[in-house]
Image 1 (cartoon, rainbow, N blue to C red):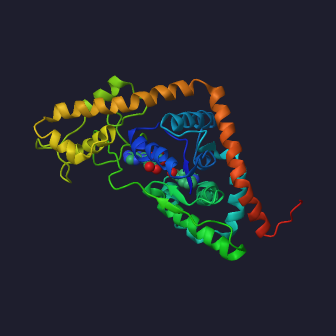
Image 2: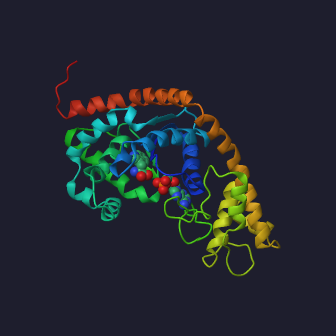
Length: 327
Ligand code: AMP
Ligand code: TRP
């Protein structure tokens, strides 16, 4: 089975990204032949700093490896290093409906808040379809917010197959289970995020142990004193979910173990568990990030493997569409 996912090299990564994203990538790597693509071409569709793009691509590569991807076994690479991605995007635009692109909620949301709306922001989902289809992908692990884009990729694959002959596998999404939404520790009714959240309520993957402990100790809890999950207890529910991931114990078991424990002790135990889970990630990350030569070597290895895997599909696309082949 082929697995493909794309990750944007933007923003500081946080505990929510780890639990809902990085951890799933490492787990899906076990399902078959996996491709993980740092989608640097996607990140130029909104205003950005060229210097930051360079550094963030290397940051993300180091984080993907630090959180468990094995670059020898899986293919981990940057999109811009494999020109098939940009090429397939143009070819697929011939079978993409202009009307359907205009109905993408992410495009509508992002274009509303800007003075300058790039054409790339509009055609972004076509590039994403190419990413997936070039690898004859069976399964795509993604967040719920990407569901509409994946549906569009499936439509594009089906239209191409119908118009030019069977060429692509029609991919299916793998979505995180319910509860895979980590909330801000200070405002547990909103998602943890480095762009919209509170500073004290967002645990960054590179926070030092004492900073992590402090953030958990000051986490907002709910009225009452029982440690249990419930709609009326967003703060405690979030902490239980996080504790469950960090310890591998089901939330129900933790509720039983903490029946007679106060909020203060509970919060500091959650903090300790998270700090212990993240310390080796941070260490490995810093070690990898310090060695740019090694990162470039790994990026080149990923690019070679991705070029080899995508080339046959790209060639078939050109042929089926009727372009002259020079032999
Ligand atoms: P982003 O950096 O916001 O584009 O998110 C990248 C990935 O991290 C998403 O596809 C989600 O799977 C995951 N993610 C981001 N924020 C959270 C959160 N608060 N809780 C759980 N998963 C998250
Ligand atoms: N659009 C995705 C996001 O914002 C990133 C992405 C690009 C992607 N290409 C992909 C995800 C292909 C899965 C498969 O998160």
